[in-house]
Each structure stands twice: as structure tokens, then as C-alpha cells.
Image (tube, rainbow, N blue to C red):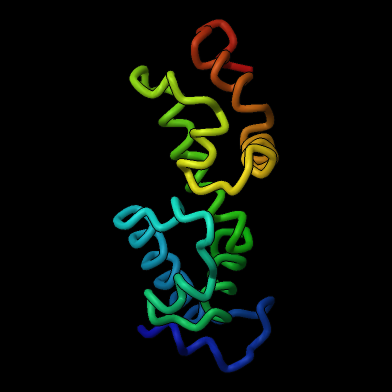
Length: 141
């Protein structure tokens, strides 16, 4: 099924099963692209750029993010960036890196943007999260 079929302007609230399936396929393609090519590491990544690579309209890609993942495109990209940052924070050989350097390496334009996204996703700062990962008595918090 081609994910472009949902561009007929039907209501986001009333997706039929074919449209939902098409959006799911778009999300599958997006996830595959994110994991394979890691474009989220580019701080200037845009919805337009990704839509061109995937050959999906920006409207459809945005709708897929919102309807299937419940997040807008930027928030979804930040999830990938945060997961990448968490891996770097835990790797011993990367411990020489500052949080700022890790944030930039993972595609954030600033530490402020990184901290805001990290706290929104994890409910705590990256420093606090790293402390909980080091201290097994706090992992359940």
C-alpha cells in the first residue's frame, strides 16, 4: 500500500484502516531510515529533507508522526537524539566528553535544547539520569 493515498484531506480524527495502515508504513520507512542512516545527528535535519529522501510528502510524514507516534516530527527526532546521547553517556571511552559535546554530537544545536528534550523524555536531567544508572539503588526511581 502506498502511503501517499492519505493525502486526500480526510480528517486526522477519522482515519480508516487503509489510511492508518498507510501511515504505519510511512512510520516504518522513517524508523528504518533513522536507524540505518542516523540523519538525526544532523542538527539542521528538517521534515522537508526527510520527506525528500523517503519520497513522502511533508504533510503525510507529519501526519504519520502525529497519528502513529503521537509526537510531532521534531519531538520524534529528539527521541532518537536522546537515545544516542544516553548510549554515549554510558560508554566509558566517551566519558571524557562534556555533556555539551555529547549534545552537539547527537544533533542538538545547544545544551539548552538537549537539556530541555532530555528532561521532557526522561523526567530528569542527563546528569541525574547518569547518576541513577551508576547507582543501582536508584534505578527504580
